[in-house]
Image 1 (cartoon, helix red, strand yellow):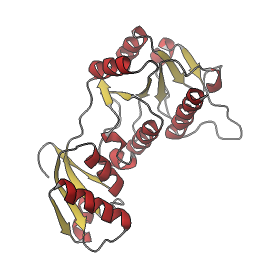
Image 2: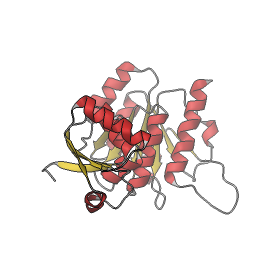
Image 3: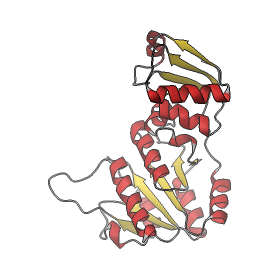
Image 4: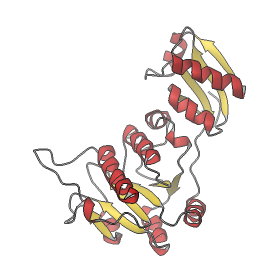
Amino acid sequence: MSNNSQYIYGIRAIQEAIESGTDFHKIFLQKGVTSPLFKALEGQIHDRKIPHSYVPAERLQRITTQNHQGAIAEISEVGYADFEETIERILQAKEHPMFLLLDGLTDVRNFGAILRTASCTEVDAVIVPKQGMAPLNKDAIKTSAGAAFTLPVARVDHLKDAVYYLKSSGVQIVSATEKADGQIYDVDFKKASAIIMGSEDIGIHPSLLKLSDSQAKLPMSGNIASLNVSVACGVFLYEAVRQRLD
C-alpha cells in the first residue's frame, strides 16, 4: 500500500469514486467474475484508463475479508472538506440548505449508512468532530455505497463551534433526542436546517442540546425504546424531504 492511501472495496463504491474523479493508484479485479455490474465497472475503468490488474480471489481476500464483489481499489485518502468554505458556498447557492451534524458516532458502518441516506435526501454537507468520531475509512465508504465521494464531510475541532457558526448564518438547529417533548412532525424543516444526531449509548451532548433551537423525538411504541441511529437519522431526513416536497 502506498503512503497516504487506503483501500476501498465493492463495485458501487468504486463506481462512485470513479464518477467523482478520485485519484486511483490501482484497481484490483477478480479473475472470472462476469456479473453485469462487474462488466459495467470494467467499462468505466477502461474508458478512464485507470491502472488495473486481474488477480485471483485469494489476493483480494488478503486485502479484506469483507464482501468486495470482486473489486478492490487503492486510492488516495478521502479528504475532509473545509468547514467554513463549504458552509459559505452552500449558503450562497441555496436558500434553504440542509446540514447534518453527527455527535459521538463511533460505529463506521452507521457512519457509512448515514452518509448514504444523507446523499439520497439532498443533505448539503455532513459535519463531524475531529475527536470521538468514527473514521471515514474503507468500511464507512463501502457502507455509504460511494456517497462519501460525492457528499462534503467537514470536520471541526468542536461541534459547538459549528453550531454557533450555523446559527449566526440563519440556520435552525434541530436535535434528535428521545428526551424531547415535541415530535419530529412539529418541526418546520422547510427552513434552512441542521439536524444533530447523537450516539445510541450517550446521545447528544447536553451543551449541544442547550444550543439547539428545537428538540424532537420520534413517536415510539412497543418494548424497544430507541432505533439504530442510522435508521432514526433516515426517518428525520425523509420527514424533511416530505415537508419540502409539499
